[in-house]
Length: 254
Image (cartoon, rainbow, N blue to C red; front, side, top):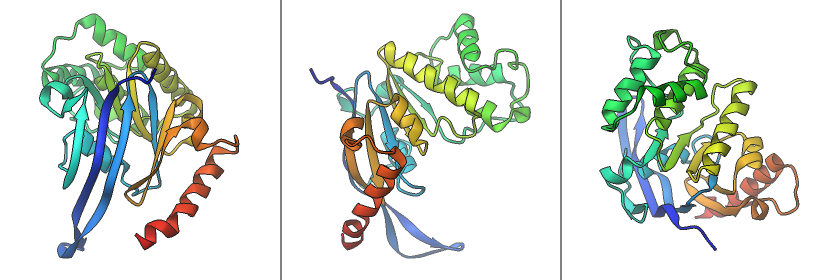
């Protein structure tokens, strides 16, 4: 039985004004073209593509942080709304926190933004999971990039959301914490949570993902199971590069 969709993007397109230096040039640059994808309940979905392929723009549109020119977004079977957004935990690729707050205060601030009640026990649990309980009193300005990345994930976990949308969650992490984050994501899947994350790390996709979507030059060129993506069991990086090269002439002509 196929699980129900949690997030659906249908024929999403997006353009931005062309910018040359400080001046806006004539015309517009298309960054997404008819992007469609479906994330199903209880799965880990890996979203992969080259730098500039459109991954972060797609995520921003899915969250309502920027508007699409055309297309449709459904979350939990309904159009995107504030109610649906509260059922999502989001961690950006480069989280930014006030340098005057400490780790625990960042979680308190996030709690107020979410408009939900979070117990002290839950805060301790979350900070413990991301390895920051002992550092909770330190100013985030003293945190390393990896620590800030982990704090961003902790903020996303605070309200125990049904779905996680994570942009490069392993960026800036050392091998130990990359492993720990993967273990956390697998644990969340076991609890019935849905996870949609973008990444460049194909080894992580191979290890934990149920399905994968590949975006290139603003277009989806593949969506399906990991087995369908790599039916021969070849090196996943080689398979990805081959797919990109095969599709490039078609995209250029389009």
